[in-house]
Image 1 (cartoon, rainbow, N blue to C red):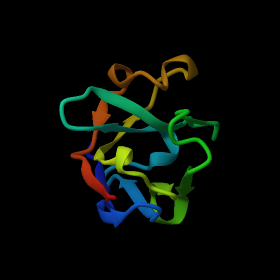
Image 2: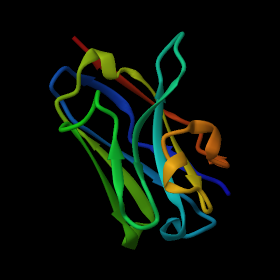
Image 3: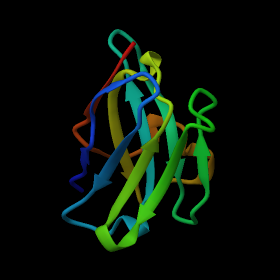
Image 4: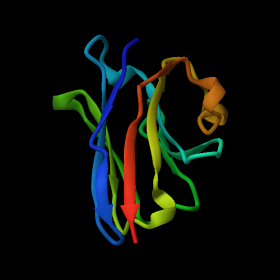
Length: 124
């Protein structure tokens, strides 16, 4: 399954970005979607997830500043990020899995399909 992440860019502290994850091959309605990020020299960490049921989960580091939306008409899962900080600078990846269980949503290794990543840079 091919995934495409887009929407990254350069933004000042306090700014907003909306990232999108889509697939030209499948309907994302049937997949759990995870957004993860990886800063230089660091491991891949959870940002947010949405299960097929619609249940969302957010990392403590972004809670209150980030929201996930399934946009069915566009077949995207969007990550709206507000009040961005320099610590949010990273490559952001979306991941999808059709059979993942709720308890595995926060684990990158549990996802079978990954997008190419989109770079978010927050300047101070």
